[in-house]
Length: 180
Image 1: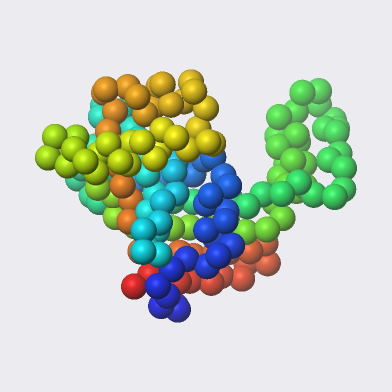
Image 2 (image 1 turned 90 degrees about the horizontal axis):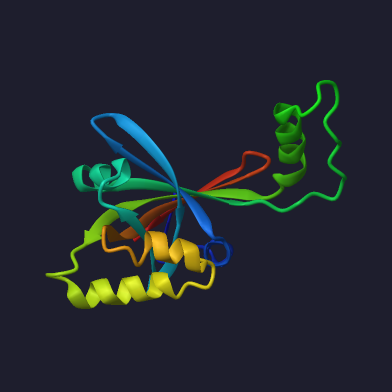
């Protein structure tokens, strides 16, 4: 494991260019995964992920009980070869997905471990407004998503401090970076 002060540049570019991240939370040894809109933010080279979630969700309750989270993001690029049409049974979802996956997974997946903290809109009003504004003005989040998941008053803003980055390529070469 290599100790670094900032994320590798290609990871930062990936985080700035994608719309969704998979968020894993856990409480009482029961894991939970969610697909999330997110905003990447860096201050003094320290990486953060901003998400928002309704307060009546499993992920919110898990974050309140256990700040440790894991995020997964993919750098999937369409392959050069054509995707073969499904064969055999008509409308075979399995074959379609299998062929898509063979053609699409080309580069890396990045796992980020960190600590999630719900930003209190009352006691941390300035920070809350700042992070909410950053998330709301992320060009990758569309208006419908913003209305449902950011502007809704039943939602909370969550700031994730990234502590560890693990990059795995298609040859299963793993690079691990601990952020100090």
